[in-house]
Amino acid sequence: MSFQTSPPKLDPAQLMACPQCDALHQAEHLPDGQRARCVRCGTILISPRERSFLHVIAFSFTGMILMIGAIFFPFLEISTRGLHHESSIFGVAMAFSEGWLAPLAFAVLSMIVALPVFRFAALIYTLWPLANGKPAWPHAATMFRLAEESQPWAMAEIFIIGTAVALVKLAGLAKVSLGPAFWAFCVLIIVIALKDSFVSKWTIWDAIERK
Image 1 (cartoon, rainbow, N blue to C red):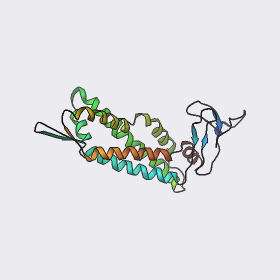
Image 2 (image 1 turned 45 degrees about the vertical axis):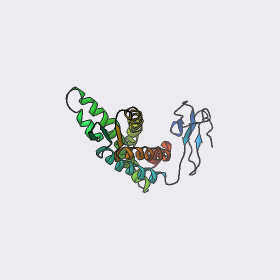
Image 3 (image 1 turned 90 degrees about the vertical axis):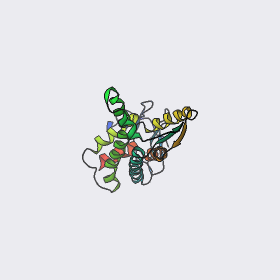
Image 4 (image 1 turned 180 degrees about the horizontal axis):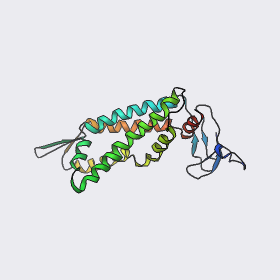
């Protein structure tokens, strides 16, 4: 299902711009399961799904639990020439917490841990009352906006890709064993992808305003 480009003299509150090509469309409420696409570039603009708010909340809680394990459980175990070392993400960040490398520890914990956790918490705060048919909590719009704006900086997925590349190079130098935190991160990436598939931004904004 596609939108028709908006005619002139429409209420600005009823218009939405395509995030890819900026074409203006008149927003409409759609039945669950249908999709509205941009008539110019085909980008999905609205994709409501049945009980999507509950699914997003469930995936967000799951992501926060996985993140706790990914931070503190062993991430990698390296053995070479009789030497053995095991480390977690938190331990690695704390190893750089002193001196001129302290900003590196802050960046690691912020972009890999803090921002994803914040996004999970912001989505739960925004959608919990809406999923239960209640008015949105105070500052729900601000929390959801911050969650969306911080998405490009939440780099848990990039961290896993970088780790995979590094492991290929380390495999020839030492014996590398993957710890439970690594697999928790892999599952976390799947959970994030599933969560994003249920997020319809326009539907959430519309629910916040209507409630």
